[in-house]
Amino acid sequence: MMIQKTSEIRCDAAPPPGGHYAQAVLHRDTLYVSGQLGVTGETADAADLSVSEQVNFALANIEAIIRVVGASREDIVRCTIYVTDVAHWGEVNRAYAAFFGMHRPARSIVPCGPLHHQALVEIEAIVAISQGDEAKK
Image 1 (cartoon, one colour):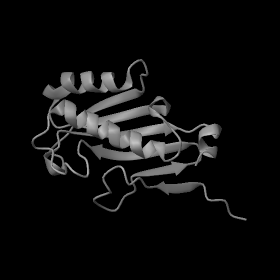
Image 2 (cartoon, rainbow, N blue to C red):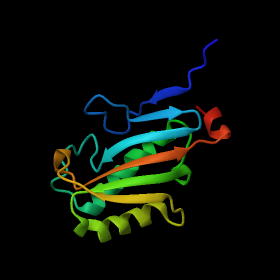
Image 3 (spheres, helix red, strand yellow):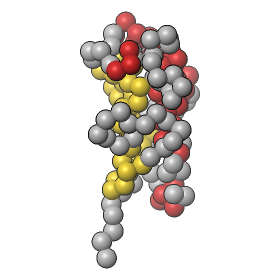
């Protein structure tokens, strides 16, 4: 019998993919969450949102996606943050720190060009899924 080692994860509480990619992919005990913009289903354009609001929305989208497999923000082991201007770094860092509190995932902040929907930030995450969490699926 062939056991599937990779599964696409879908979450209705986060904006659906706008292209040919999965919101997240679970491979064995690791969940890879695609980059999430700082928007919601109701707020599809980020033009009127502050950088902090965009960070909060992006992280909330990630949190909604990882809950599908029974994980929590404390299971996030790495984030990559793409930001359109390094001048936003301080505000991004404050919002990120407020979201995670004492938990400190490994992180990179990468300056980039323009993002879709006038977003200023996009965040992707890698999540460690324990055997106990996997059983909750």
